[in-house]
Image (cartoon, rainbow over all chains, first blue to last red; front, side, top):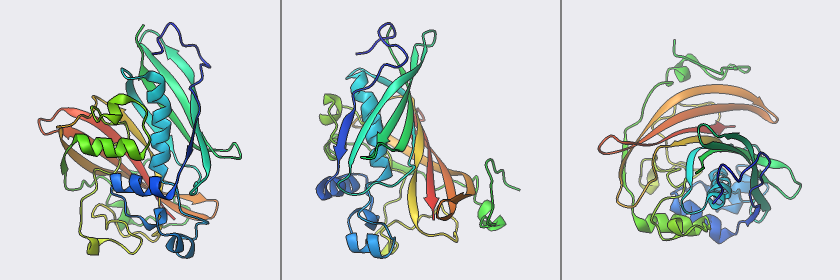
Length: 137
Length: 160
C-alpha cells in the first residue's frame, strides 16, 4: 500500500485497459438496474438516438476510474472523495484505458489528491476524474 | 425566485416553471444491501480487490443508480428509462450521463439498511457542440436507517 512517505507528486497509477462486450454491458446494466436502450438495443441506438453504436455507460467509466484508485490503495484503502465528468461518448468494443497520477500531497491532513483519466484509442481523455484519498504515514 | 448558481440560459429553455423544481426532493428510497448484489456488481465491473469480489464491502460506485424508484415495465419510457418523478417536463428529451462527485463517510457493507434522499440542486442550460444542453444536478444523501451519514453524491444528467 502506498504511504505518505513513499508517494511523490507525479507518482503514476497502473494503467488498465477496459474493453466492453455485449455481455459485460448487459450484466453491468442489470446490476445497476438501468434499462436505457442505448446500452443493448443497436437498432434503437442508431436509428432513434443517432449514436454510431451501442453506448458504454458513463458511470461504468466512472467505476473504472474509481478502480484505478482502489487498486492502487489496496484492500485497506481509504477513499474520501471521488469525482468524474463524462466528456465524450464511448462505444461497444472500444479499447479504453484508465489511469492517473498524484498531483498533490497534504502531509498534515494525511491526504493525497489524484488526477484520473479514461483515454480512448486516439489518446483523447473522454472522462477526467479526481480523487482524494487518506494514506498512512 | 429559486436559487440558480451557474445559470447560462442562452436559448431560454429554462422556464420559470422548470426553475421552480430546484430544491425539491423525491420520495426517500430504502434498500437493504446484500452480499450477492455486491458480488454481481463486482463481477460486472471486473473488480480485482478481494473485499469487493467476496462482497465484504461495496465498490465506490455501487450505489450509482440506487436512488431510482423501482417501477413496473409498463411505466418505462420508450427509451427504456424510468419515468422520473423528480424531473420537470423539459424541452429536450434524450438523456446522457454527465458525471458525479461523491464524498464517502464510511464503507457500504452487506446488511446495511440505507435511506437515499434525492434533491434537485440546480438546472441550467449550456450550448453544446451540436446544440443546446440542459443539465439537471441532483444531490443524493445516503444514510443508514439510524441516521448515520454514509455517502453524499452530486450527479449531473444531461438532456440533449
